Length: 245
Length: 260
Image 1 (cartoon, rainbow over the protein chains, first blue to last red):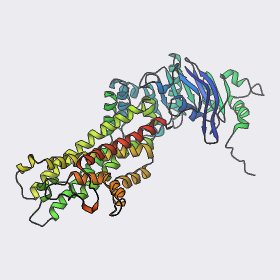
Image 2 (image 1 turned 45 degrees about the vertical axis):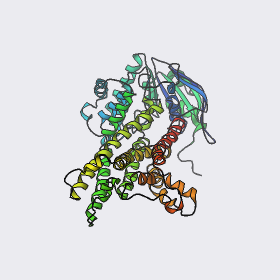
Image 3 (image 1 turned 30 degrees about the vertical axis):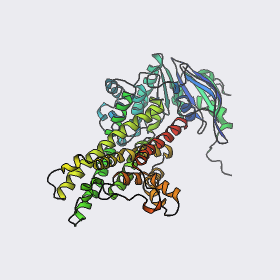
Image 4 (image 1 turned 60 degrees about the vertical axis):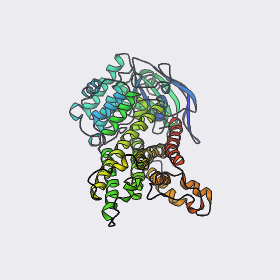
């Protein structure tokens, strides 16, 4: 379970995350939505202890992640497909991660098989496509068999088969009782995948509820998730195309 | 901690660019030393070695400071530049331990590179100087032992100082410039025949410390040269200890506080 209480992060005069409070429950896939620059990635970094909050607190299963000496057994995360050194092979990248947390080398083979990268294990990451890098990031997140999983835009670069695979994987992980928290811009994908949604705009919470409850907020009875999202975030957009006067 | 050391070892040995950097760095140092002996047409070839001053030339030690300082810096800068640092700190939230493991592995690898480079330089120098056997007088020569230790330890000193600078600065180009200025250019800027404190600053650089530690009987300095106190042997070893220590301490403060 991920619990954020009044989480706030400022960069100079800009408030990236504004008194954000939410709870991400186990056994569900929770989608994390918000317009560009709304503070999603910053929030995920705060959850992982990569960034320090100015005020408020966020815990993973009751403890801040920075309080753990090793993290992979507590939370697995893939924030950016490029968060790996291009000069290393996929196997060496994962072997170093596994070793740092005292995990067996066998786990490296297991997760490479899980994400379908066995045949590319010895290739350098710099030569991977974006989709392959996404799979590698997911492999790293799964290494410690953690109860909590966090993914930032995991659909980027995946082909149709990859998207079907990742959807099945996330659902299976949630069905196993894990907490799965997925940020994405793809509202149609979230409509198919997520059980619950956390929606933010300009760093502040707009919604923390089930997909059905969120969809029911639309003005029109048949409004799509996209329509409701556009409606609720309309006054919190930082970047809008075609705004020239 | 053992697991972290193994993890950092995997990271280092699996990067071809790092291994190539070590080899090229060692070759660069070796070529400086060999070139000095070849270029020396005097009948006193290898006199520096036989005088207890070891085999490393001034040029070679500048190459060590620059190249191995940069190699140490790149170990950290490449993690920041590639974004790998986020993956690393998610896996190991204990950032102090990550820095300690990196420092230990980098120190061990570069000290080994220093040892190999020194031994090869020594053998080649002896051959080129027409010595077919290791001069037994050097076996018991304290000056030679000190010079050898100072030259070998200059490798980890440079690399660890570079590692610390890399954490503090984080950006590739700026880090390399900072390493060059601190380790190579600073000693040439801070020299003065008039002000004692500037002279003290000069003596507090690894450049000056290495020079003092590698002076033997035949090329020794004279106390009071330049009118100021010259570096002492004890003080020079202290410089060897303090530079990487301060760099790593600053790195520790930065790495614990900063967002990534």
